[in-house]
Image 1 (cartoon, rainbow, N blue to C red):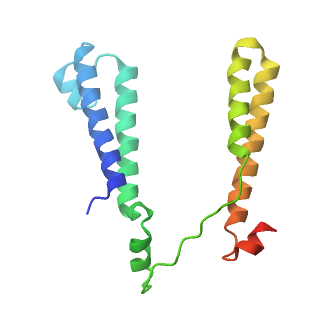
Image 2 (tube, helix red, strand yellow; image 1 turned 90 degrees about the horizontal axis):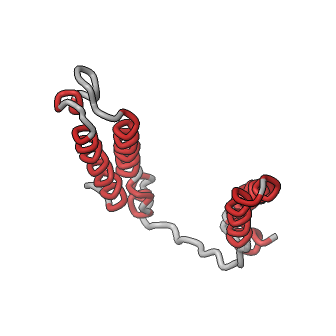
Length: 152
């Protein structure tokens, strides 16, 4: 069975592949060259053709990957581990301020591209701190099954 998440990736892969064919033919490529990935004849403009084929390949890989992992479906995972019932999911209800800091860091980086490099570097450092701290916080929120222990 093809899962919902993988349908998106397979659809995008097909769209990117058809786009690569159309792009290769419309930029002066030979029909046989476009379908043989440039092995025998020309494909037209190489960069756009390669980007679209690369997007198709990556998307197809992600589609097969999500099919193999069953979209991280808890029921499918419980079936693989031979559990009788699905373990309950925990909800995290603590306030998280790292997305706000990330938004300010991205804004500083965008403004720093125009104004000057010190602001861009400050935003990049802030974004690096956000990535590390947000990851640690998400790990700490789920390190045990007891929410009281996780808050410490």
